[in-house]
Length: 505
Ligand SMILES: *[C@@H]1O[C@H](CO)[C@@H](O)[C@H](O)[C@H]1NC(C)=O
Ligand SMILES: *[C@@H]1O[C@H](CO)[C@@H](O)[C@H](O)[C@H]1NC(C)=O
Image (tube, rainbow, N blue to C red; front, side):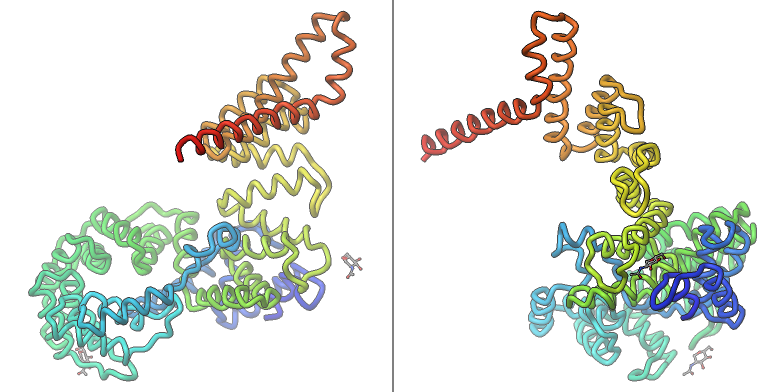
């Protein structure tokens, strides 16, 4: 806690060296969050010099802990809502299941619709997205679906009995029974479950060949658990000849489907160099991903509810904690809250702190943060005005085909800010911006009209003297003339369309 407070400067004057001391003691004492914060600091080079191997040792320990706690349910679903996106598009990114949708599912489930029962069962089984985990309710919904011979319902009942919970006593035979019923219908969840029972000899004798067969059928249907366990069998050579490349391939598939343990296994392969090229960088990236799915991720939901309830200060405090843990989305959200002046928690050097967080988020590859960095240097927010630094950031974003950044580069070339003044390069950038995004069409057209105007002026000036009087007037007030012309065009268009609409009626 002290490490976090010194690191983020909440409640006391920030000091990176003190943060480092407290976090180191915390990590030595075995605290997972302390280790994760420290891992991120060594990874990104915050208050210490970058050191991949040190970052790896910390991330590895946390990843092991997170991986060891993965349940068959997979843990609550957490969505890391980006507050910037949220402002533009509130309904789709809220991360919670819509109340109307829940009522609709409940209506269908009560009428005996098995898929709706399974969906509700899953939401209660896993938790998250606005649902409190509730195994008793999950069990009820799955049972109803299973009674109607729904294979998914049966498979999930199998999972619940295989693992056990407060409301359902662990029972190998019952689990086996339900898994079998589902697998007999060709259900991949049931097949993967049955494979695990044979693999570990739960309620049956250990039988690697049967396990392999069931995992294969499941994996062939694209089910991530099947892919993961099949990968494991190839990795260890259980019941099959050891084959690292097959293992990697299967882990990759399962990881793409979001299976946490697949990420973990890949991370371990790259960390140790067993079955894959040893690469500290790749290992840390994979482990970091695993760590970010730890139990602390649910804080994203808390922060977001606080934010929605207008309690921006507590939202900011939680996002700051997550930002220190290394979550890019949290860093962007902290920067956004500070940037918009939504919180009274941080009153001093608000822009400088936002700049710091944009910088961290941009280093993790978030393009909008990169553009914000450019903007901060351009306008001198939280820093001195530095056109060259701004252009540098825009260039990085522009290389990723970001239209806004490309447009800004065009403007900087046009005005010679931080870049060589060059109308031709400016035009090329404007054109490129329009290619990169259709949204840029209007501003690009305006900019090109303006450039066309500048060309014309240059031409007239080169023609010399005779028009110089006109030129003086025009150069001084060129923007007024431009606006006038555009206003005429707009008025004309509106009149034209109105005329047509009347005609249509
Ligand atoms: C289920 O099987 C496992 C593995 O053999 C065993 O450890 C566990 O105790 C069994 N569960 C019950 C309730 O018997
Ligand atoms: C803001 O921070 C500066 C530099 O750290 C400090 O000198 C100043 O007193 C602070 N102002 C307030 C209002 O805390």
